[in-house]
Length: 192
Image (cartoon, rainbow, N blue to C red; front, side, top):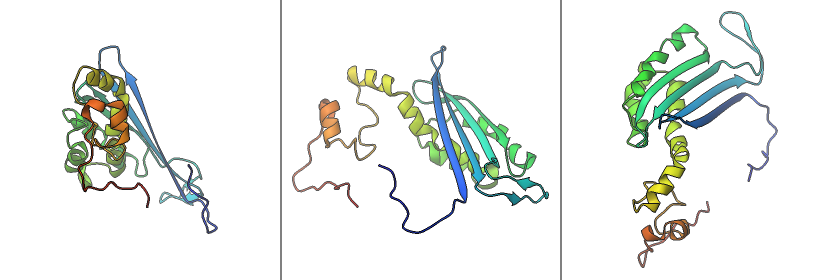
């Protein structure tokens, strides 16, 4: 379901797109690549006097992490195609090599905030890196299924409303880990 139409006339201002692609490598590892693009819907003058055209990216950046079966980052790179302050922005790219050694499922977002917060990183690159964990989980879905078939509890159980251990999804897909609701407890309705 899409968002309903706005109840007030409006004009477009800012556009951001984030794309993530993942790849299974021949060496038994996985690459997760994310891209962020920002552009305005109107022309404007840059500080240099040049005109930034509508639709022309002023942020265009990429981050790639290589992970193992346990979601450990074994390689990382961050690059820029466009940045509003040129080399002052792009100079921080090599610092994102410090993602190596982090685990996408173990306090990753807090770790990137701690390591790359404020002037130790790029706000937008750090925000882009924050999308990697959920993309990695989707990437590893076939491995998770095999793990569940081998008798190991899938890590995603209890991680969101749909995968609550007392809900119908778990009862159907993973009945061995289904936990019926205790008497007297209530479930959120999902309505707002």
